[in-house]
Amino acid sequence: MVSPADNWMRVSHGDPCPVCGKPDNCSVSNDRKVVWCGRVSDGALRVNAGGQYLHRLDDDPYDRNPPPPVRIRPSTRSTSPTQDWPALVDRFANGAEEHRQRLAGELGVSATALAALGVGWNVERFCWTFPEQDASGQIIGIATRRRDGSKIRMKGGHTGLTYAADWDAGAGPILLVEGGSDTAALLTIGLSTLGRPSNCGGVDHLVGMLSGVDHNREIIVIGERDEKPDGKWPGRDGAVRTAKRLAEELEQPIAWALPPDNAKDARGWLNVMPKLPADRLADLFVSGLETTVISPPIVIRPPKPTGPAVAVDDWRDQMLQVRLHSLGCPGVYIDASTTGAGKSHVDLAVILWALRRRNAV
Ligand SMILES: [Zn+2]
Image 1 (cartoon, rainbow, N blue to C red):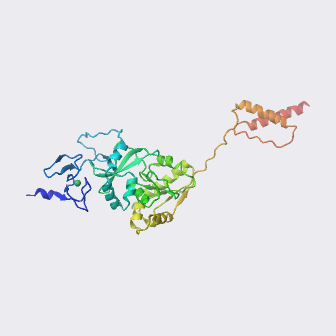
Image 2 (image 1 turned 45 degrees about the vertical axis):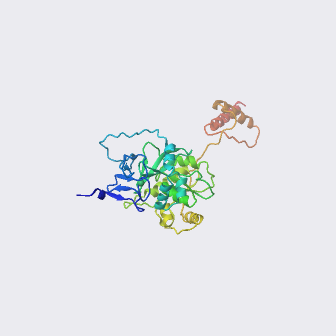
Image 3 (image 1 turned 60 degrees about the vertical axis):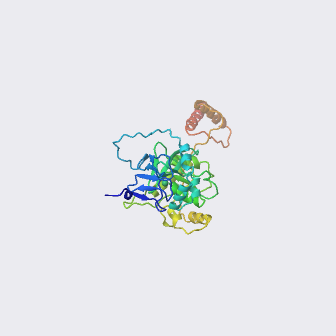
């Protein structure tokens, strides 16, 4: 006979309550499907005599990559795309200081950086929430991070960028990293950072944000050292592709680089650095980057037209008259007519006119 107590684990500092984030007063089932939480009543299935609230943990309303197998059980969940994302972000972020502190500790970043990114905690789904914004600052979706580090995106949203309101403050380079935790890492040391949703995603949003930035400011796409045994290297190739597309779209040089000191990513780098002042760490990060600059393709633009529009036939008539007038007046004449205006056509007409006139004399 198994005692019911054997099916439950008390929460601890190392394994805090997934509902309230605290290290005491709550228990998690061994299969991690349900929690008796001593604090949070929101979304609970029921309450016991001890004042604890029962929460179910196995709900999975998120998009996964790769997609989950098709469920037989019909879902009653709303898949409405008209989710009020800003309201949701506010709800998750309000009162989530404790949860941000916990995530800050796990990631080795500052809780202030997480707060600046609008990170919250979803009490019902037991995951941290990272709002994603478009170039205008509109929240268009939410990326989430579970306690096991798995990342999924809430259904119905769009992928956007992770960034703080003052993301372009300062004068240093603008660094485009991959994901919310890397964004938090560079924000922790005060660098201007935009978080890309994946190794090559979010370029349209980036173009929108970066087109207003001073052209002299360096923009560096930061890749990841995630090379696979088969030679594939998505974090590097995605960074190169992103830099190329940005160079084309913004028509300015864009650099890419892998994180300094052989680190996997920006957060991995920060985690192994000694405790130094933030500005010193920022200097070390930027000076440690071996950047490769991608130049924009050369774009040849026809000169902008000046003066009123003239029909080609009229233009040719005018050219002919000017040429004929020039015949008796030696000098330098510049014809700025564009390709296709009929310069050689008119030249031929002038020569024929001159020949006819000579023959007639
Ligand atoms: Zn709890």
